[in-house]
Every structure is written in structure tokens, then in C-alpha cells.
Image (cartoon, rainbow, N blue to C red; front, side, top):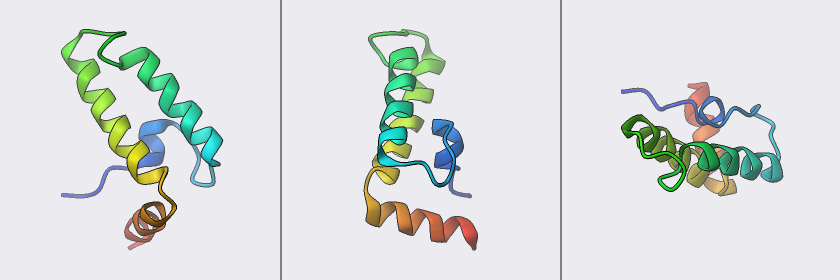
Length: 71
């Protein structure tokens, strides 16, 4: 199974700054977070965005993720 495109999930470019990543994650959370949207599909979107945020917000994990995407 291939790794999801975390940048696409958050709607940011590959060279997005930490501030841009956080803003994108907060925007998704505001729309699809459990307090904002009780629909089942929203929970899946929020979980995927949270995974993307966890990887991309950590520089070491982000570099590792970027290398896997290239291969």
C-alpha cells in the first residue's frame, strides 16, 4: 500500500513552511473535527489530516516522508 500524499491531504505545497502547515491543519480541523462535524466521513478526513500534521510538523519525520515519496 502506498503512502498517502500528506501535502495534498493538507492542501499545501511541498515547500510549505511550518506556519502554512499549521494553518492548513487548523482549517481542516475547523471544518472536519469531531466538534465541528459529526458526519462519519468527517472523522476519516480529520484522522488523515492529523496523521499528515504529525509527520509534516516534525522535521525529521518530514524529511523521511519526502524521501519515501521520491522513490
